[in-house]
Length: 469
Image 1: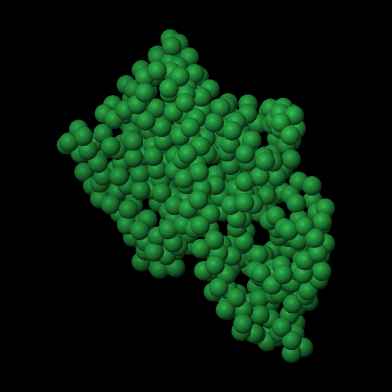
Image 2: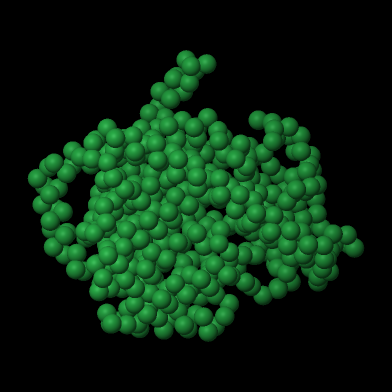
């Protein structure tokens, strides 16, 4: 058994993956918010804890813990060099620009979000006209330092609206905006103690956001696999399913390093460069979503970890203790956040699936009579892939408000009578499936959720699929 284990971790893909985690130059962070680029739905069935914890996940978790210890040594070595000290001094002399950088970053974000009819980021659609204009008006508060704290309070209000509209589980992806609001409100506070909290708050919320979206790739692998299937060059030649898990751990590592204040300036530089390089792939949506992150990363470059509060990594002075602190707490923190993430994902699924199944009880007779067929094939890179063949039917995204047009809609996908997802196009990436024969059923639904009727019968197709490889 032990021989097989050590043989596994010394294979090419595991050896290279630890280098990617340590060097943190892999463009896995291009997948940071997969929901912006994937046809996702919270009615997609998330994995259970036992399904997530695979041998690959265990090995990468262990390697990530080793990478934490290596990062401590790396930072100590870098800080002893003259060029690094000179670079830090250069940034520190310009730290007075931090407030301006964040004002510009938030202003640009709000302007692009207003133009896209989104709340703060992509894929959070605004249905209330007044809320969109209020978001636009907050931009003018950023023009002057004296009114900027009110823009911070406004950003906090917009985030609260998002919590009410989209739920806490979804909005924890964007808890960074809480840190941005806090930064803008208190960065110029007369109290040194209060003012000193602004930068740490930004570090913590940015790091937590990265960890939260990293866990998303483990619990909802079908979302990330969809993107990698469309852009296989992002996988750097690795198997797509393995790369997705590696990408998740890169984000977990990056987020944790920001929280504990380790390698803060090198991290900020690497991540912002990576995000810039992937803009050519994902375009305007990424610009809208990542502008505020770029602003935060530039602040980290200018400020370091701040001048008032010591980062957690400096709680201990001795290098061996710092290495142990970084490694052990990475595993503890990841595990602590992982459990509520899985619980939240399944709670969200049960709520969404319950509403969708209830809407599906209604039927709709339309002027058009769509036809439906489907096929399921196994792809070594992305596991089981469902291909839908339809006629007289156009797919639309149920997550994006649209008119109820005759012939438009989406497909519900069931395996053994359990809803596993909703497809908004002809191809749907299935998550892990229990091996063996299973009954798959696909039905077509109108934008209002009701099921199409053809010849007096609900339009659906059922097949027995052998999910054995």
